[in-house]
Image 1 (cartoon, one colour):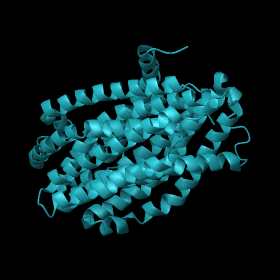
Image 2 (tube, rainbow, N blue to C red):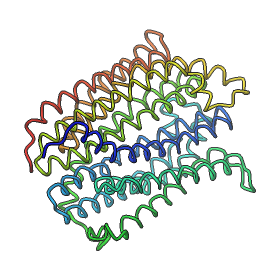
Image 3 (cartoon, one colour):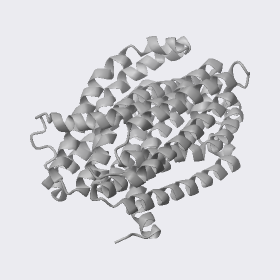
Image 4 (cartoon, rainbow, N blue to C red):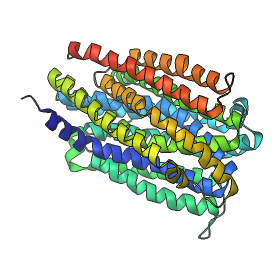
Length: 451
């Protein structure tokens, strides 16, 4: 039976809203740390921005294996193959653990590569203190990502939402106590923020693992039964689908991280403004990302069951919803920039006025790339649903690194536009990515063959 556009929208929102909520809650973890560090000191805020960016870049690369779990499990469910469901989820977790352990040495020597990236010595030294603690959270964070993909494909998104929301409150309390040294706790500054993040990541994994493994309705999948046994065939499938996802995410994160690094060359105030404006833009992006995840599940299920009409109609609905929200955020960024930026700062501090002034310009530019950013992530979600990840990886790499980063650099430094030029380069790179990836999906969608 063919679904109407209304029923597609309803199904997408029922699945997607909790995912969106969990992404917003996850982002709130980082926003709360930014707010607290912004009130603690400008140097500490800059360290939080650059250190958090470094952690996020490595996380994004490793999360490709966890993200591959979602479309693979969804397609297996569409084929009613429950054995394959647990095989994919387990091996996604195996690969996540391996990646987390192998990459920790990068965080241990982070001062050297922060200095090589042009950061000031005091920022690099404090950044290493932060990352040596936060880096231990890579493995639990990736395991959480894999379990979220597994549960989302099973349409168990409510638990993901509530667990992540609970984590926000726990993180804020621990971070506040350890950053400022209240309630009898030591004053640790950025180290306190790192300890809070690590604690929450471990706790979130434990909660989701208990739910996924022992909820009566999910026990038939036997997720943790003989978990220690390797499944090389399933691991190979997860790896082949996942590594291009991770590299694509790395290249996109690299676009923004490269802008952060170059903004650090311009000045500490500019870097702080950039970090806050980017947090605001990222909060809006979480909605598009949640819709992208939901459409990956629904597209994978439709492909697995052979419903090509449903696949195409669902794609149109997802695009329409994302565009509608994107236009709403454009209006907010242009209408209330000072109010948005002030949420992150202690306005009594003298440098806050400078941060708000520069951040207002950056938020106007963030409004420009809202729709481009939305369309590229929706297109990636659609392509992952039909298990097409390698060509999108190359398209994204071209858009972000051959177009976006060079345009940012040229506008910012040789042409002298500074931070404004950096962000204009982001706009151009995202626009090219959205056009190429959307063309790729609609070129492939009518030709999908059920495998």
